[in-house]
Image 1: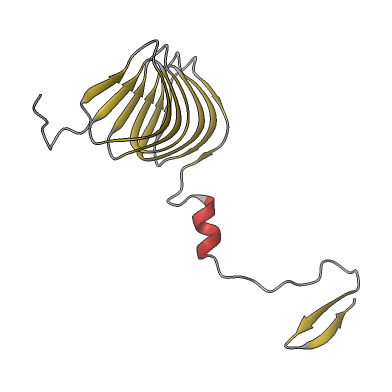
Image 2 (image 1 turned 90 degrees about the vertical axis):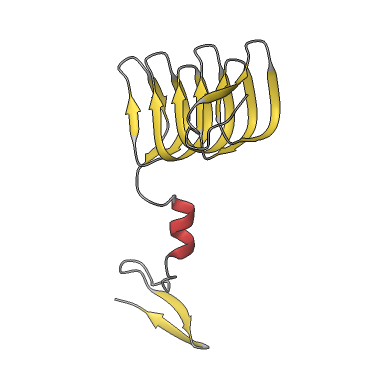
Length: 149
């Protein structure tokens, strides 16, 4: 089989119905799942979950198309498509989300450039301040300071 470098979207591998795989998987060309896949998935290509496919994983992918069931977290650099028969239970991080009428999505979707974990790492730490009008004390440069209102 000859692989073309300019067509990473093409589905060239299939995890067939009746097959269950547990572990980590990475691939360079498209993968279709009609069986059960659990674990971690990483690719700069396309993952397609067929109508009878079930995936429970943490996924880092370019493009994912869901016609079966997905549970876990998806980080998609291009898009997430949930088709009419698709069921998604988990969190999505993607710049483009397409959900067809009749599909099921239970979870959170973040369509910004960065996932929350990366935002927290890059945000500067703010000093803690006392809340409201309740008296509180805090240490500043080795000295104790009282706050009251």
